[in-house]
Length: 579
Image 1 (cartoon, helix red, strand yellow):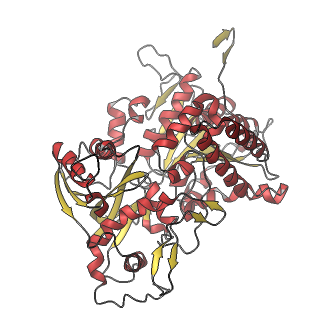
Image 2: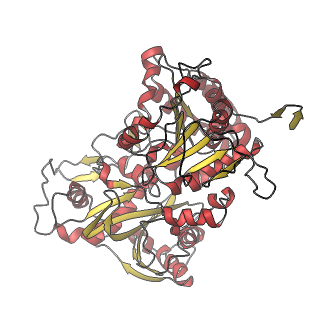
């Protein structure tokens, strides 16, 4: 309901538990690690609205990895929230509206205290407040600012942020800061919002939570993961229609959640964890169950329940180095798209195809590999490039890039999942000019199914061919790549100490679950000293599903088939621990 009484506007908006705690607890620096469906976009919009109201003529920086990320991810959801509050884009014909995007504002708009010459990265509000978009791939230095918001903070380079963005957060101390007549607590603060970090370089987002244990003796992450495990059991009880068990588990989660009530630290830091269950009044149990059914369990635990990923001891893949990951949005395409569509936030939010990926060369073939699992099926996409997207340097030798991933949950023994997986690929790469792929086959996909005359691989290839794709098939020797030799191959590749082996890179934005899978796969050693993947579901301090290794298996098939012959002539029974 919206009402207007003389000089003020009242808007009734319902907030969930995590949003309420975030908005009500005042702190200089706030960290919100929230799962999908929890309402991060609401919080970003609420932060912007508050800054516009309490700091007129001030500047809020929006720090992002790329301008494309800001235009397609953060800003559309932010302005959807602001429009709920009554904000409207400025209309140059009627001379009405509250903001203009990436252009010089009209003369009727008040100007900010800080003088701004260029407005290519600026969203101006009528009261003089500005949002200044800072990107780590372009405009990373802006004017003196009063507050910073970083959405999807796990995608930024923290070291670069500290060097370039943090120093700009220093404006208007006498107007809004400690020396002002009415100081604002949040002035010169930061809001970091993100989904759960999944690489070692992103763990800085979790370190602020240490105050829970230091100040109140609460081992936050350990208790949170126990809560997630109980929630998983509760979902299974709901699906089994075991009402007494569901009720008991529900009550237990309520009790456990109360023990994790957020609070502000002594140095004015707020750290909050939130999952989909905090927003169940808006989404309903049916949404959660549906996600549980269509997602593999590891992805569900991380994406929906916000499971905290600890570092696996003795990891099969040595992926600790920053140079292996990169973000690669096609900022030129997205900026042109935004300008051509007059910064229509709804249209920008729908940009979901390969034209937005700068690491995808549309003139060259793609490489794909599948893993037909017992619970879900997975597809990995790769392409060789003469460019290192992590170092941003031209390469004289091809670099093997894993650029995308897809998966579907298996409901029954039909070809439906084959079509569903193929269709996800076909839709995303509809505009890919070179309709050629090399398919690295999953041997288990060659087996005939009881209810079909054709195998999964045959059905999959036919589906691609039906939509105009030329498919070249390659297969590795044996049913599965041998675990010991594959471990050695990955060790040589990831060490980058032997020129006979390729360099590999991973799109950290598109291949999130691949990296989660690979970094949560343990290596075990048998009695003969041979290495293998640990396929069990056991893991220190937590229980991960067995399908945690599937995306890694999917990438393995392509890498092993392409490069296993390079192990020949090497002493493959031993690898120096320093390699």
